Image (cartoon, rainbow, N blue to C red):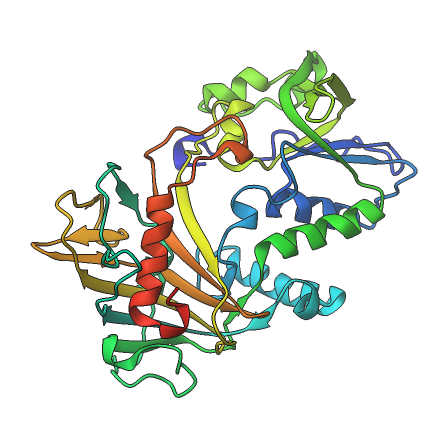
Length: 392
């Protein structure tokens, strides 16, 4: 919270009243990386006893069904926010060591670089040029911010010579290349596998995983709680409106049977990403759509995460605009620039990630998110511009 709404102590901290074996009924809403790792670490808490405490994770579609299953999965100790990233980076290493992450979810240390390139002209079957836009979508792309974090780092002088093991790039297309970080501060995971591998041990230790759409959080009034937790008078109205209310149940609709059910709850953890305001309208979270694709290259590629800036000729007259200088696509007279992230993965897979947009409204569920075939094709084309092994 900002300075205007600083609270001197946790609003909902009732630990002083808890008896050592007082039962907790914890409901985690959302089965992405945050929800599943929360469940995992709760079951490792020294006071957790599955015979006393009940933990339920409610997911609306499937585990890692939204961004947690489709992200690039790169980990950097220099990423943002700096207040938590070092801990996150070290925990990933520990989890991989404890649970065989190298084999189970593709954890490995990687190098990271950044390049600018001028794409070569390719032609698909049917005569269409790579990068040609059908002009049916009005698109405005938003930077996801990861590129800016890399640009702020102090780096060595830009060079045009590629590392020897990046032989999967077409060298004559690369204008500049620079190392951003080495394996000491850069790693990666396959996020869909990682999230599911966190859910499994949590379930084995007593977490109940339910597939259902949460419709409501039920509360009851508690005057004693209100008196005990009074915040400063400048606290936001949203916080003040919840004083004196304690959670009692979570209401959800089972996605298989469509039956409405209720789960008793004493604590709720909301881990629903952009859907959080549906349950807590005051949450300052917006819905940004982003695209990613995976490609099976012709041969295994060296391990790298690469930020790119690829310029290429375009005959498109309906160019995309950008909201800031680092957005994914910009245009000049007959040149377009697209800035995907290319991440090689174990098991002969490459993930190509684009930037974000606000072009479609957030649907009720993750499996209803509308993907743009045009945006995905642009990522395919961009990769093919500079990497022969990724040319379909």
